[in-house]
Image (tube, rainbow, N blue to C red):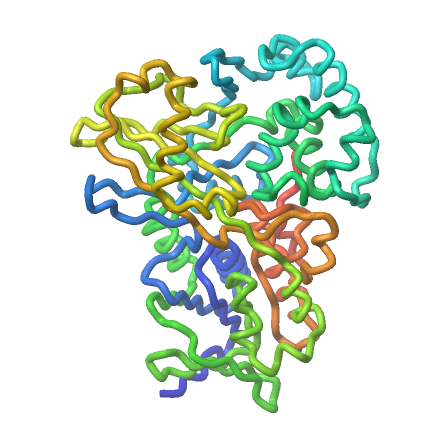
Length: 455
């Protein structure tokens, strides 16, 4: 079957139903473009996914996803679709050490960065010498140029930061935000994280926590919104082959033998699949070949069900710990108390196997939460997204392509493209909006899709 769509309107074929593809498809359709969205899975959301845990019957996420107020494009995306009410604003951040002591980080009514002065000065896990060093380091980091890059550990060593400052402040923030080992983190994106979260706006740090599983958040309501916008959605259809015809028309063959022709092709798939999908065509643009320079890192989630609560806090930053965060996911219908410990950049830890990871996390919890010592673990499960994100290492932007390519009618979207952000949900949505802008611009339509940053 051969289908030639779009005799009256330009056609854009979007391959990939993650956040990047969804953002691009919706934006293009709203601007009067005919859009077909193809997703090989039977659901949308990409890596923001959930699955049914057969033992509990719970719908659990691959990994806890967290946004912040500085993620303006993700926030706009959710508000536009009408799913933002599923995300809870959380102005409090709790930092806990293995002795069970907790410090609250919460902004006060002062302009950034002084809104954190009270919390920072009262932080129990830093001594006064370390607080002075960190304050000086943060100020010097702010003064660096945005385009500067270097190994960040070297920068820290040259700017008065002790190992304990790194272990108790810089590393917990950056490993969680960038999913990158500290020895690989680059200055450019380390600066991005701290400037955007701590310096630009007093609300930027506030968390957004999904109150429903990710497949529910990015589920039927998103599909319904896209359809109302005019997007033709094909779920459960894998792309078998991509080709470029002599008349500059893209031809995509699906696994059901259906052929779709389009003026524009937007690949919104993981970067590892781009070259495979394009085949020999990938050689027409050197930037596509540079993708092989990107390195990925896993994120591991340890899902725990107890017979009683181990903490009344909604989430906790864990210091001097294997895991960086613990999230409380509430009480299920069986009366079990469900928690999730998130371990970013977990490649080394996973070498010991899932059982060892579970045992290591369980061994640490009683020191952080005294009630964990008496609580009975009903069930534990370790889930790892093996290629969760690319690493935001020194010089990584060399390997990140633009949304436009040197191949006529071919565009790219994904958090790996040049977005100005590291690998995040915000970066994915930004890439979709940027790709949509370029496609529309090529049609003579100049529209600003990207939302402004917090100022």
